[in-house]
Length: 231
Image 1 (cartoon, one colour):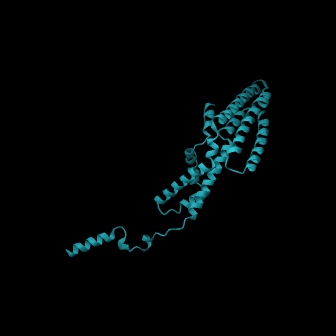
Image 2 (cartoon, one colour):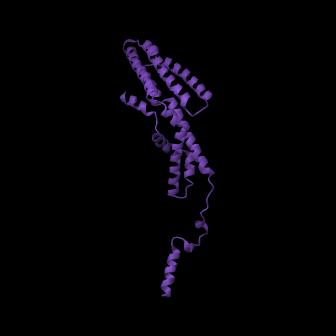
Image 3 (cartoon, helix red, strand yellow):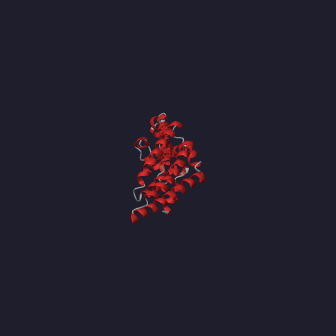
């Protein structure tokens, strides 16, 4: 329980956490792998990986920083407090259901409203600060999400143990945080592929037209041999 509560603060993802958490995922993406496989050397592949890392950072700055930075202690604390209170009421209700066959009212009329209120705080923040969709699209998404949440909480009031699942879904697996993270990650991938594909292929003239004697220091050796013979 303590671990769940501590993890709930970590969803306010920092720039470094975003880059580190998504770099490995994108390196396994088929489109990104196709680009990296074009690298002619280990050094070039490393440079392209560093570019992908940099692109993730820029994408976070553009599409996620404002959302996570403005969550703040007040909003995060209020949402967490309501979810913790809802979880506590759920557990009390579960105990009543399992021991005395009662407790449904606690879960439905105390736990559920607290969790819905926490969801409303998260939804309002998403609409205000997320850089994902237009205002209308975000409002529509939030409206359908709140309606679903009402329905889910009404059903979970009759299922013991669902309070823990609800708590995890509202904190560790928060759908709005997940949406912002996924959107910024997707934008980073698009930017990386666009930048790489827009670069012209640079022909390495020295590798194609340089006389063989001038490669790898051969000319120096030939000069030394000529001087030795002259002596």
